[in-house]
Length: 117
Image 1 (tube, rainbow, N blue to C red):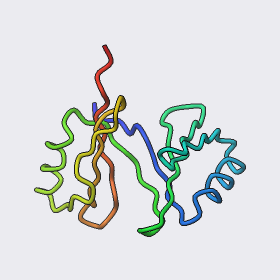
Image 2: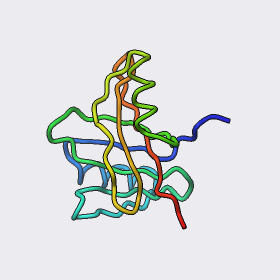
Image 3: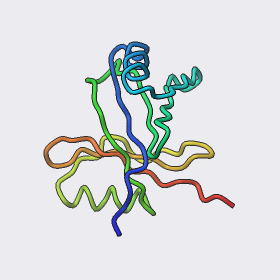
Image 4: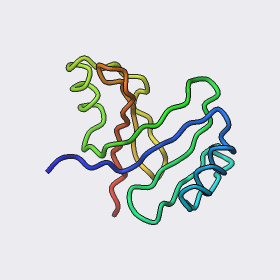
């Protein structure tokens, strides 16, 4: 069985406009988290997602794949012609994330959740 897609993100220059647009279009519940400047998307089914502001980069849509070791998958992707664009970063109480561009330039995220005890 392959690694599952567990999260997606949408980035717009006008983050509040994106939140308004997607919540009305798809009836998504989007909760804006001021401290992170991030809109958490609840679609009612998995996977959930988020809306970011794209101030310093072009708008995009990407997805995150769950992996057991973010560093190993970054190395594997690099060995296959990819470029790391966001090194591993820990999100407290959530897990590790990273992102790379595949050989065609598509951004893909990696995610390793925190083990629940």
